[in-house]
Amino acid sequence: GAVVSQHPSWVICKSGTSVKIECRSLDFQATTMFWYRQFPKQSLMLMATSNEGSKATYEQGVEKDKFLINHASLTLSTLTVTSAHPEDSSFYICSARGSSGGRETQYFGPGTRLLVL
Amino acid sequence: GESVGLHLPTLSVQEGDNSIINCAYSNSASDYFIWYKQESGKGPQFIIDIRSNMDKRQGQRVTVLLNKTVKHLSLQIAATQPGDSAVYFCAENRGKLIFGQGTTLQVKP
Image 1 (cartoon, rainbow over the protein chains, first blue to last red):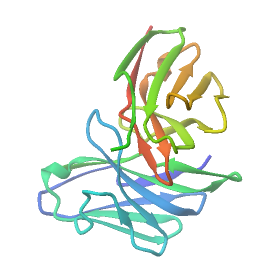
Image 2: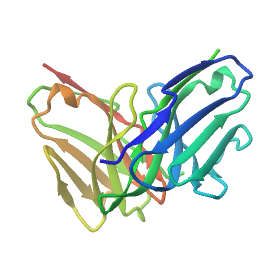
Image 3: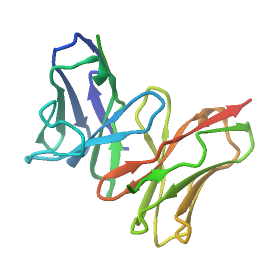
């Protein structure tokens, strides 16, 4: 089946620094990628939708200047958390939508756990 | 606002019993729903999906039922196993996936 990878799987950083998270679709081309954030014991909240080669569309309440999204190719999207603060500590999950095995569906990455000290 | 929500936050079942996880949605125009399983520290895993032109869809040990009249869908897991322990989310596809709050399934041996 289709595979989506994320790197790193976990990261610890100091408050005020920036962190970049990569999301790759390994065996299919993702026309659209999504970034979600999940706090403990809560659901996944969509942060933004990105299409290859165009600007991301952010959900209401998500700061686009703080969460920079780049979708430079059909297999790679990056999320950069700029000037991270402890409240940004969360589980970030990317999802890629594309066709695999003749069927279009949406696949999720394993997530990146961010801890801001 | 519109949302996809779940009735119960935690469901505890005996190994071998059947499990039923419920989900309510509010957007009557929704026409595609997906159930996901999320194990601790991992990303969601696709289980089964259903379109609004269907009332029922079956997979391996899982069945999804859709009742459009009351805007409700359920996930039935037959012969629940310890490996089924996880959080289950229903998601509504509106061009982007909107997730419900999740139900934690605990399987007692």
